[in-house]
Every structure is written in C-alpha cells, then in structure tokens.
View 1: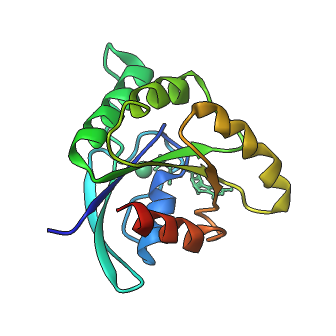
View 2: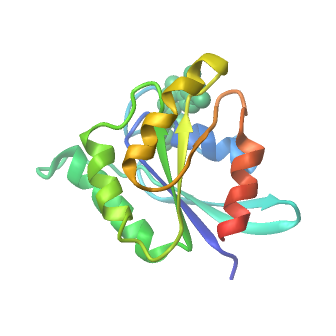
Length: 162
Ligand code: GDP
Ligand code: MG
C-alpha cells in the first residue's frame, strides 16, 4: 500500500486548492463556502516517480462541539491513520484559536507533521509566514495553492517525510 498524507486545517484556508496543486489536476472540490468538502476524500498523487495518497479532509459538521473541536478531531484522526499530516494555515489570517488547538493535538503526533502557510501568492505575503513558527511544529512552508508558488518544495518535503 502507498503512504498516506492527510491534509488538515480550518475550512477555507485552501486545503482543497492545495490538494489539487499537489495532484497536478482538478479533483478536490474548491468552494468559497467554508466546510464544503464534506468528508475525507482520498486521491492518488505522483511526484518524482513516487506514488502516495493524499487525503483531503473537510467534514466540518456544525455540531454542538463547534468548529474548533471538530477540526481538532480531524487532526487527531489524521495523526493516527496517515503516515504524515499536512496542516494548512491561511498565512494572511495567521494562527487562530483553532490552529492553536490543532497544533496542541499534532505536537503529540508520532508521525511527521508539516505546516503549509498558504495564500502566500507573492513576495509581500512572506512576512506573515514566520509567525507560524509559534505553532511549535517546525518550519512553516510558504505556498500558494492558487498560483502554485512553493508547491514543488512542499512536495519534495512531503516525500522526505513519507
Ligand atoms: P478549504 O475549505 O480549506 O478546502 O479551502 P478551498 O480550497 O475550498 O479554498 C477556499 C477559498 O480560498 C477559495 O476561494 C480559494 O480560491 C481560496 N484560496 C485557496 N488557496 C489560495 C491561495 O493560495 N491564494 C489565494 N489568494 N486564495 C486561495
Ligand atoms: Mg475543502
């Protein structure tokens, strides 16, 4: 079986857009409406001749537990079922209480965790990235799922840890 990368993060940070970028094709559903990716969806990816599976999580149901608990639960599940986890953060927004909660869960992970600072579309966005070191999950990697900036470096890093 091929290794699995699970992509987690708040709704609307650009997980599905980034997943499409990592796949090199349009498959993950992208919407402006938060929480539109209804469940976990697995895709086959290929980079530098190596195959792996990318799981795009969404699955936010507006239940009693609320968004923060729901995203943290997704991260917990990812950490136990995937070979590596990619936490996607909107670098323009920075780390919210939800990212803090998710990071707390992921810092206990025995599997590798990568942090993508998404929506860094141009050079100006780079200044926002360093603040994400505060999550305690290592170096935040600047990417733009929309324009493709940094996606090759991210894929190289993914293959390093998978
Ligand atoms: P998800 O809910 O985390 O899966 O987020 P989506 O991939 O559905 O994207 C949510 C919104 O953010 C959409 O309007 C995307 O076009 C936008 N978006 C995603 N990635 C980027 C990016 O790198 N730059 C910019 N400017 N917008 C982005
Ligand atoms: Mg999505």
